[in-house]
Image 1 (cartoon, one colour):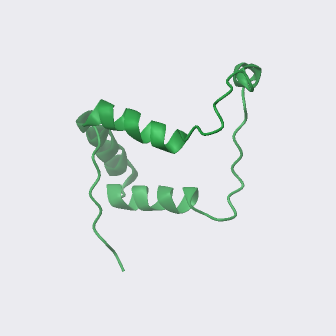
Image 2 (cartoon, helix red, strand yellow; image 1 turned 90 degrees about the horizontal axis):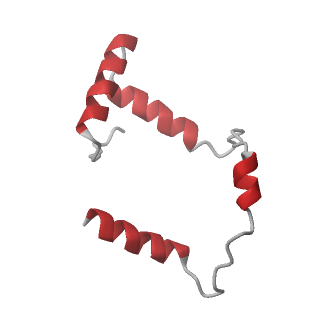
Image 3 (cartoon, rainbow, N blue to C red; image 1 turned 135 degrees about the horizontal axis):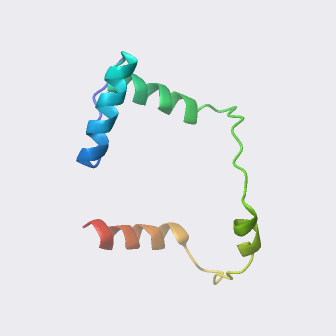
Length: 82
């Protein structure tokens, strides 16, 4: 069953994506659906390599024990976009 999904994406990205889809002879919906299938596979074998710079930063930040990063992220994004 197909369901409609509304996304908010920068106009220039939408135009480039539509052009890409047209060049590939596919619909933008099809490309996005297949991308979402790939990234949501339960047995995904995609591993991200951590760069030496990021590894050097590991452990350099000590958050308080009661720090809720999801709440902090939500607050920051709300301030930025709302």
